[in-house]
Length: 218
Image (cartoon, rainbow, N blue to C red):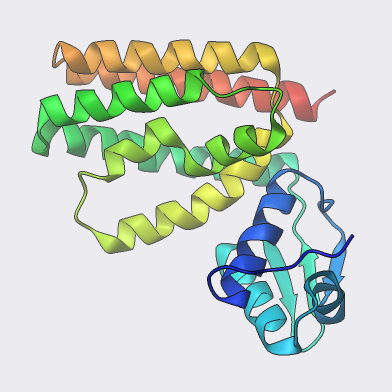
């Protein structure tokens, strides 16, 4: 079935559509897509197709082959653990910065909103669930309080990869566990206990690492 684009720029819409399909694993990791494939899928010229694939390469989730197309990156266990470790470093830094420099009431309110948004997602809805991994509702809040674009750029690249590996290893049981861990982090922030909040954040990532290992070692 042909996909047609009606809103925003062609390259932007194609980029977002392809990214969603990669996160959802509708486009299989390790597979290859040519510029011609994208042209046929969206009934567009080579220029927006090439621009969309180039943006995906910049995100780090595909490998660009000049004038040909892309190979969708697949992630080994080592890749996944490296991505996960970087996410932990970035997120613990962001939490510490937000608690030490941000408005605590605003931080708590935004985190409450993020937790509620995540809880209300219909886990049977793959697209909504995939979007939640990509948007990273809870963890992204901390970066709202950081005024350093270089850190945010690194975080965004890491988030693209992180969303894919975490969605790939997802389970209904883990969704509830993750939400509870977010709540524990928030409770520590509410009482303004930075050390406890960092401890809970690191526990959250330790448990996430265990879930990744369980998935990859099946």
